[in-house]
Length: 332
Image (cartoon, rainbow, N blue to C red; front, side, top):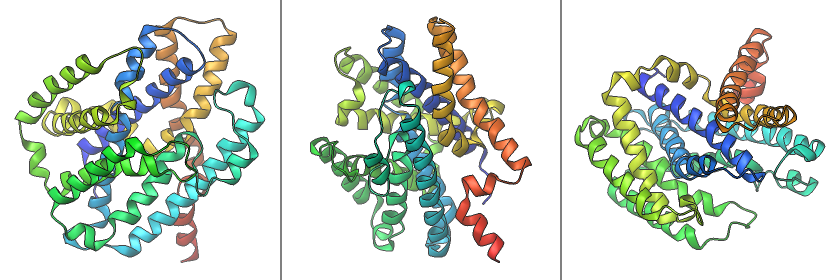
C-alpha cells in the first residue's frame, strides 16, 4: 500500500496526543492535583481515540476495499495478526502489572489476565475493538448501504452506548461508541473530496470552542458526556483531517511524519516507559508540571521508536509486532 503523507502525519499527531493523554492520566489518576493536568485530560480525551479510529477506518478502506471489492484474504491475515499482537502485549502488560503492582495506578489480577480473550486490560482495548471493527465492516452487506444510513445507525449506537454499563465483561460499550468513527474513516477515504472543502476547518473550530466552553466543568469530564463527546470527536476529527490534508505545514510536517511511521510501536510500548519515567521522576522529587509533561512525552514517544529500531537490527521486530504475518512469510 502506497503511503499517504498527510495520513502518516495525522498518525504521528494522534500518537503524540495519546502519549500526552496517558502522561496526564497517569499523574491525575495517582492523585496529582493541577489544573493543567485537568485541562489537558479533559481536552485530549474528548477526541484523541475517535481520531485514532477514524485513521484506522481510512487505512482499512485504503488497504482492503480497493475498487469496491473486499479483499477478504488480506483482511483475514490482518485480523489474525491484530489478535496475536493484542494477546501477546496484553499478557505482557497484565503480568508486568501483577509483578510491579506497587508502581501502577490500576491493579490487575490473575483473573483479569485469564479474561484477556474477551475483556481487554488497560489501553489495549483499542486493539480489541479494532478487531471487531474489521469483522463488522468487512461485511459486504454493510458496505453496500448508503453511507448516510450507516453513519446514522452508527451514531445511534454511539448514543445508546451511554446506557451500556462499563463493567460488562465483553466491551460492548466501547465497541458501540467507536463504530461511528471507524466508518467515518472509510467514508473519508472513499469520498476524499470532503477533505478538500476549505470551509470545514473554519466551521469546525468555533463549534469545538463553543462545545468546550458550554460543557466545561471541573466536576465531570467531557468524555463522560457521550453525546457531547461524539460531537467533539466528529468535529475535531474533521478539523484535523481537513487541516492536515490542505496545509503542508501540517500534512508534511517532518516530526509528525517520522513519528507516524512508528505508531503501532508507540501505542504498544509507551505505557511501560511512562510508568518507569513517572517512578523515576518521583524519586528525583521532580514535581514541575512543565518538566514532567515534556520529559514524559518525549520518553513515551522516543523510547518505543528506539526499541523498534533495535528490534529490527536484531531481526525480532516482526515476531513482536506482526507475528502472524512473519510466520506466514517464513512458511512460504
